[in-house]
Image 1 (tube, rainbow, N blue to C red):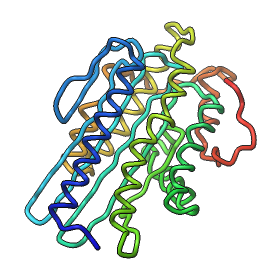
Image 2 (image 1 turned 30 degrees about the vertical axis):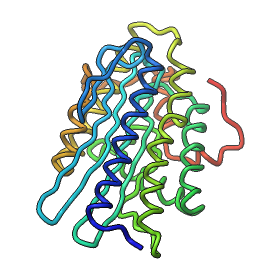
Image 3 (image 1 turned 135 degrees about the vertical axis):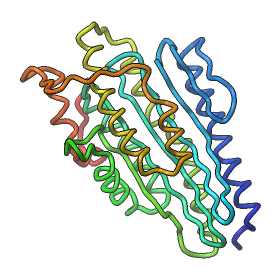
Image 4 (image 1 turned 180 degrees about the vertical axis):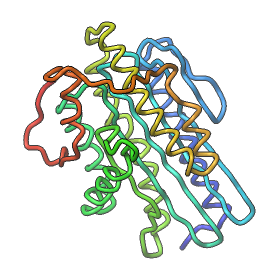
Length: 279
């Protein structure tokens, strides 16, 4: 039986709040002494590992339309650690409801080992709902996570889906459980990559490239915010990187690690790779 309206909303809020608490605790443990602020929009600034991270819960009840969500944006300090974003949302209007979600890895430097790990963890999560779901969610992510004015991907993709509404009397509970599991999947999908790269030596060249790549992220965030619901847009803008760089016409030196990133960002079946390349 479908839970009542108040029960559905309270259940989703509990999932999001619990997911926020657990992820914040994981990130604080990894970053040592750094601490997030309190409240619904929890921000960490100037940590040893994360230069900025936001784990924000939003909720809007506009008469007959209700929506709530969790947005996660992480900007690491080391340029070899990829940035990350994820967004989970629940929407309801009367007896009509649906869930949505997305997760993306956004590197400055490419490591096939990291891409394979990330996509395999996401595929395993998607398989718990439907073995065919991952391929569809990955295609949606590949299409969505692009800079349309540059016709280029801004990350290694991941998964993205909207209007998730499984059929049957237990459809709502299945979708809610899938959302809770998706939030819990962030840590095993992303944090092993952080641990693997956070101590790699880097210098001013890598820092400047990181700032350039952050400029691309800001462009994508502004493009998203222009069409997103207000609460989602505010959550995305709240966690913009603390610094970024724009240099028109910047072209990496051929054969350099910076130039090699473009080839790595071309969509491919990372989860189906038979062997990862160690970075």
